[in-house]
Amino acid sequence: MAFRPTRRRSKPGYILDLNLAPLLSLFVALIPMLLLTAMFQKTGIVNLYLPTLEEALLQENADDPVQDFTLAVTVTMKEISLLKDREVLLTERIENGLELDKFVEELITIKNEFPDKRDAVLLLDGDILYETIIDIMDAVRVNGDRELFPDISLADRVLEEG
Amino acid sequence: MFTILIIFLLKSYAAQGIILTIPADLHLPYSTTQTTPEPGLIVEISGNALVVDGKRLDVDLDAVKNSETLIIDVLYEQLMTKARQYEEIYELNPNARFTGRLVLEGDRKIPFRLLKKILYTCGQAGFINQSLAVFQEE
Image 1 (cartoon, rainbow over the protein chains, first blue to last red):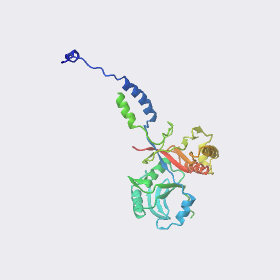
Image 2 (cartoon, chains in turn yellow, orange):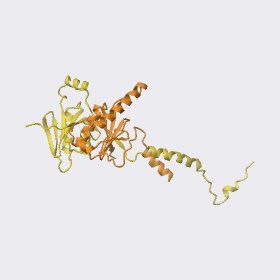
Image 3 (cartoon, rainbow over the protein chains, first blue to last red):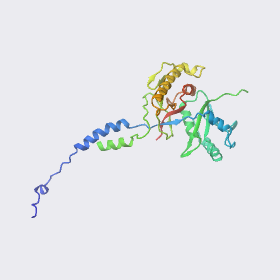
Image 4 (cartoon, each protein chain N blue to C red):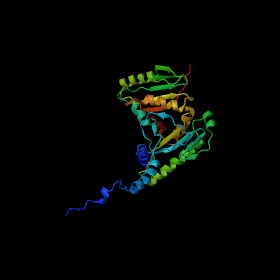
């Protein structure tokens, strides 16, 4: 037996009402939860590296003395220098803002030469601002996706006599 | 409208790490780091205030900057109290090991002479896993 065609479908201008109440109650629960966990400004951390006594002793007895040198970056208000042990490799003036391109190139050259070297030390003047320290740490730490010298320690720059 | 809001919020949803609450007057420096914050004792340095785990310390940072000594006594006492608390928790719950983890939220304009004293004091109090909090560059 055939059904009689419904009258509702043929009625012009009829719109089926969607029941949005469950969706809205879900949104009402979701929005406060997401607002609480949202981060509008992403924060991150830069780890500082403090060598332990064991590591220091291990480094002294290292099998590979070639890698065992101190890579230091000294920063004053006027200039920034890159030192390998006591030999100055590069000095750049930073009075008119920090330009680290050449500096990074030199760091990459050192990394290519000593791929296992991971640590570096920043020797800083007391007046250097925190944001400058972070900028320099970024340059020493990574270059794009490539890790350069991520284990960075901070130290005071000591003026040498004479 | 709700859908747009939900999509925006889902994009900024932080699924991992901890969320650092940064006070409005504290301007962190920007960095390219991708490391997310880990739980630890939070030390804030903003303007002339030093705050440890939400408690403001009675210390004049200008005097600290110009002093000869490296250790900041008030900060050291507070950190030692915190370290003792962590040790007590560890005795009761061996899973909560004291790692000496510390997150430093410093204003971008603080000079190194102040930063080094704070870091040194934290190190002396046993907080040797030090991290610097930064804003991630987009």
